[in-house]
Length: 249
Image (cartoon, rainbow, N blue to C red; front, top):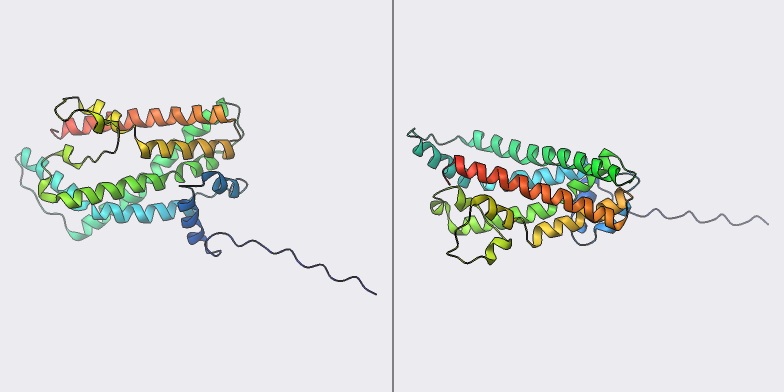
């Protein structure tokens, strides 16, 4: 009597029903609340371009929605310079939204991925540049949440409320704890704005990603994540303050 044929082992269907871009979108959403599980799934086969495509599409949409406010700033600066303002065409607006929305995340992930790779290597971890770029892209849903909040607030205020670059700034950080009549510089205000629930959320996802994808200990991963977090806050504050100064804000 022949032995029964063993049943084949069922293959687990990845989140999203096996459709790559849907799977990546679901993983990006899950990374907000369960980053450890998501990074464990992709540890052996890190994926960047799929999640990047999802982030780029959403970022382009948000960038396009915010174009009227960006154009208002352009109009103000042109008028301050004593030059006539020309309304950009629909094609130019769309191209600007696509280029800014897609290239921005790519450039930032390339830079952050490189810094994380160096930090993890210094702390004795075993990783690759691709894995560190993967960690970086999976923190972007938090950035998208900030962009959505910014758009909602600006939209409620209206384009007419924009009188300078400072009016484009929507903060959920520690600067909100300062007295309303307290005067501080743009750099200090931007640094304080970088200390809040969303940046700390992003910091946490980064630390978890470094533990799983970088194979470093908890202490080293948090140290590396805090270093990149502090650098990002200081650079963003410096660039933002310089930009406001150049635009008269």
